[in-house]
Length: 256
Image (tube, rainbow, N blue to C red; front, side, top):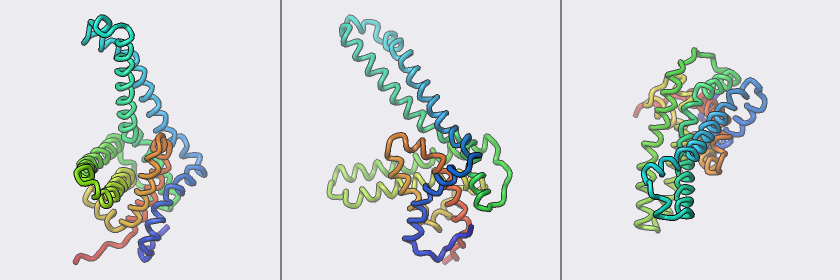
């Protein structure tokens, strides 16, 4: 498979947007990928069960320890409401944490999906990066994405809140930031396996920005639906492997 840099940017955008469906097609026709694709769901399910079970088990004990007179102060009904809200809050936070840590913990399995997809695309095999490197690259990409996106979204939200008419500009900018963040997080899997540093990855994404934006925009919209981020993660990683191959095949721009 070779990239075609002469294609119009709009075609590159839509090609990137439809990469997720090609990723789904790859999973469907590749039974060898199914065990690896199941890993994120299994990990997240186990973590969520632990978070919810731990909340039910420990929150009432924790409340009893820090507020010994809860029943006397609020009565039986009031104490039950406080315990219920405490359990609900702790479980919600636990599920959020489980969702956030699932991609890094699933990194070794997702890296195998990348290798299977690249093999299908005719990319020469390369030695495995090693378990610790796979974990570290995945965590690094997640933290960098959060570190870049969080402040930008906060600034855009403040601008919209202070001056509502600016939403005409700030809302599209928020979507742009989210699209780039999603694309960055997912492209980390194939590009880090290639040994590319952060600066090199930025340069690749800049050269293929239309395809990257299409890829990130489609996934940002799909990931807004509850549960879809977890279910689509393996297909998205397989799609990112294809996008990564195409980015590396783009010719380098001549320095001005």
